[in-house]
Length: 117
Image (cartoon, rainbow, N blue to C red):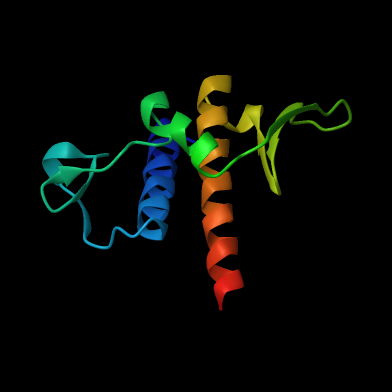
């Protein structure tokens, strides 16, 4: 995956999380590529900023586990509930962790939404 594709995947995850959290008028302006806006307020960059991502752990009571996968060509992984993220799929361990937290928060919200119906 190229750097641009990875960047776009992060923005897509952030957009999805924002929508699940009740933001519906989300825009990304050409002048501020990668920043999502609702009205005149910039939304958090959950996959790219620990100050935005960290509080999701407490808010959704995420339990983070680490696994060494000796037989797996991907090596180490992060497990949060049913979410599995391989370190090797990300530019750094730090970015893999933030991505896993956001992905797990999305899974939590989707599950909660599904259970209400």
